[in-house]
Structure formats: structure tokens, C-alpha cells
Length: 304
Image 1 (cartoon, rainbow, N blue to C red):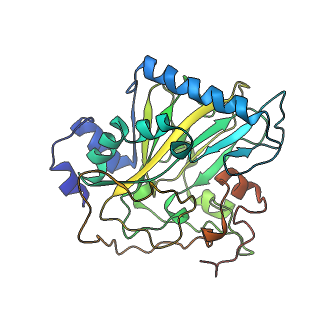
Image 2 (cartoon, rainbow, N blue to C red):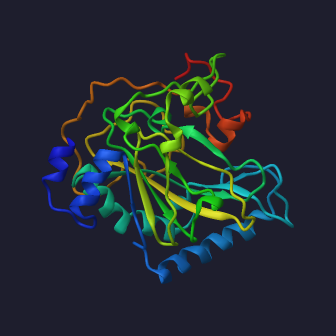
């Protein structure tokens, strides 16, 4: 659906001003959408997974671990596919967050993926400027990601920053000069952008950010050592169809969680960069930006 068509429909959660702001800026933030009690329930499950990670010594199918991870000091970069790991995360993904997605992509919504990212102040938790859609091209640019803050988050905690209006601009190459996937913009392209205009969303636990798949975003390192968690859930309009392998396929991907399946695909004429072939596996953006084996970093531009 076009933005005009989406905005012509009544909202479920967001105000009309928030919806218009999303389409104008490429992102929107909503404070304290999720109650303190619900956040506490989610945090309890998150803590269970942190405890489970103590017995792991290397990244695998459930945990993407930072280099300093140990049983004494667990350092998870990402809990992979949380909606598949615990029923509560699927409950969250298909609850009010799906209604928020419907306010921005239209009444027919499909689930794409989820992940739970952490920052531990270990010197490796910066996320460089990037755009999402190059990881998973679709026939249109409706895909969006909703970030749920599970603790009060300020700039020093590694708050996510967004470049307003960047979703209407250039779609950048996220390979380096050697043809290796790096999952972020190269330095030359970053120089084209006014990164000083970035808006870093600081908000209490239970708040959300929503950003479009074309929006340039990133986050600075955290200066806190207590493991800031951020639950991320991605959705798309049902008329947006992926045409490359999914980085993290699950039985829920493509499931209609609001409305009905699409009978027609909506094609945006703007081109999209093709990522490496993820059918062989994918770890995380942290691994890609660090150039780690198995992250797609060694793939060339002909892959996929």
C-alpha cells in the first residue's frame, strides 16, 4: 500500500500525527507503550536466557556470543529468533506491536523476524550506520522494525540513532571495495550524510521505536556494563514479498498476523542491493560488521 492509502485508514494504536511523522522522517518513537508489569515479565525470561548462556562457550543456533563471554561474565550479543525460543516473545510480537505495524504498513501484516540484541560495554558493541532492506530485499519498501526497550535507555546506554528523512534518499552499498559483505555503509558514503543530525531516542523501559527498512540508523557503544537488551520485531505489508533467502528462516516467517493474505504483489520501482546468499547460514549484524567467518563477510557481490 502507498503511504496515502495507509493514512486513509483508521489507526489502531498510533495517533495520526505519529503516523505522518513516521512517513516523513522514516521513524517514530512512542514512550511507555508497554506496561511496567509486562516489561518485568519479559525481563524475567531474558534473565533466564542469560543464565542459560553461561554454559555456552561459542556462538550457535540460539546465542551469538561476544568475544569476552564466559560463565562468570556472560556477554550475549544476540538471542537469535527469540519468538522461536520462548512463547512469550511470540506473544509480544503478535500483540500490540503488530497493531502498531498495521498502523504503518496497512491492515494486512506479515511477520518477518525477531531478535534480541544486547550491549555490554565490552568495546565491541557499536552498530555502524546501515539500512535493513539490503539484508532481505522485498518487492516494496514497507518492511519495518519495532524496537522495544526493556530498560530505561539513554545515549550512554547505546540508544539507537536515526537519520531523519534518509528513507527517501539513497540506498547504499553494504559491500566493501573487495566485494565482501560488511553490513554497513562504507566511510565514503557516511561522509555524504549529515550524521550530526541523527536523533538518538532516549526513553524509559516499555517505549518503542519504529523505523522503515530504508532508514539509515546505528547506535554508539554503551558505557554501562549491565547488558542493555533491545527486543526487535520486524514486519511487512502482506503485499511485500521477499525475493532472496531469509537470513534467519523460521516457521513463522511470512505468517499473516493481521488482516488477510495479499492477492497482488506491490512492486516499488526503486532497485535494491542484493545481499550474499543467506541459505548457508547467518549469524548477526555484529558478526558481519566485525568481518567474522560465517557472517556473509567473505561472500562476493555475485552471491545470492
